[in-house]
Image (cartoon, rainbow, N blue to C red; front, side, top):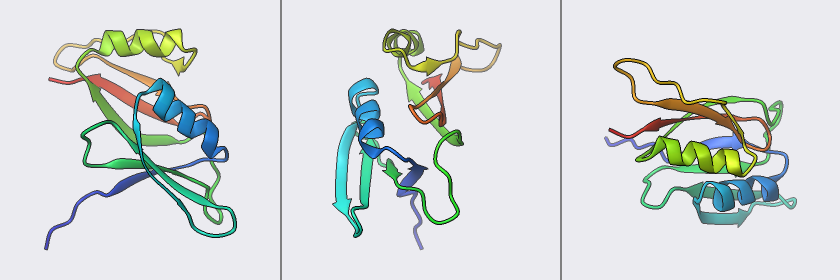
Length: 123
């Protein structure tokens, strides 16, 4: 039996704002947008070539959107350039990049609804 991670879900109250952030600021591609009744949409975004996507969808029953530690970790070949890019686009990003012995350079940023994602330098 094979199991794969299909999607990471980030509940969001404003899907259009989230979609613009993930595609325009982070440069992700929109892979899917489906209507699933009642005006609700399932939207998937991902970095080009990534096997796993992020679903930005309305919160389910008893779930609140925003302000979550997502546990999502992104890798980049140039952590300094991405950090500078996010700052230049007024993203809520850590002031500095953490640089610790034996650990890749790392920082966190928050999407427009305050959900945290981590970025580290790919090895």
